Image (spheres, one colour):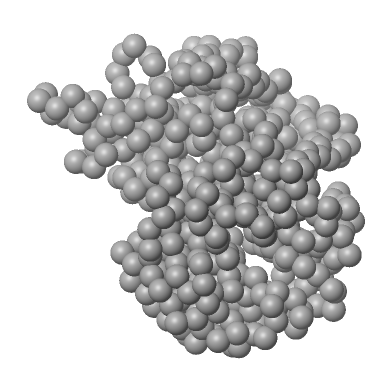
Length: 505
């Protein structure tokens, strides 16, 4: 894949101001995110930027006073410490709370921890879909003179991405750095774009391998070990004519919403679509066919499916946390298909599953057999836990997770109900509660953040609050297919980054 991505007019606010605590030296994360909020505010989302109610500079949108006000608000949301900086969990939780109710879109964080990895192609897939983001990198120093791969992470910093160019194995990142401006910390410096070459790399930290993106600085090792993505509302669908379609919201500077549509004819490639799921980052779809054996992988920026395995016939499938491992069932047998494309038997159940979902928070598979009144969790060590759940006779039962990953939902289209099953201590708890019911004939209900749901009714998009009441959005009644709908997930799950020091400056 080659990519030439750039963001026009991304803001480049300084983080260092004497009006901020500790002169803002540790405010790189809230400032990098404030850049993105201002960019989105200029493009049809005005509530993402706040003005002071009165006083000097309050009437000018990007005055120094309003800038400091917005950086301070973001820092409060993120629990930024003036001395210690911002943690990954605080950044993600703060972003979620800040944009809740103000932005119909999705945000995603991924961190390079000891059991996860990030690669240049992860950023490629996002930016090919016209998203914006911030990258946070760690500063690493050798901790063992006899091991050239062993490092300690000393500190970190956050920057706002303005471009990514990829040509074969050559990749270059363009960015705005909130810590690099004029020496005068009482004035906003001019916009300045920086660039660095990137390469995929692996190092050992505390004895464990970590896979991330190396920034070729020529000096001490710097690795991008986390990134945050802001995406417009985005969904994939397949219609009655067997086309896979993606829809992406575009908003111009006057706030006019347009919908970019991409379409791919599956009939000539895979036959009739049987299943379609997307990875957690909303960049890749996986499909199966009713007539042919195999699993196809389709990047959503190209809409071109590629056969990745041809000797399996999945009934249902879902995607693991790495975006590449596929879990599927064939009758009562559950398999995993790792990135090396070798199916491995995970377990055999007594009942045939009717739905699969992957729990990103706990890295476990959730399997539902509602007709038998059973639900299972399968952890990474293949340990199986079983729970009795209310029996569902409907063939159109769907399962998934709330935005935190702490509850499993079971949607029954026939009964028009949504049942929530809490997950406690890594397993499905024994109590279910009914939270949602309405009189609409809807399909494929999906949660969007804390209090929104999207669904299809009569081939039109509908949005609901947590009580099942209709809410109004710019996407109301958008024509879509009536077979499947997969909006990009809002991922509020904190990646395991306890061993990563905070991002400072």
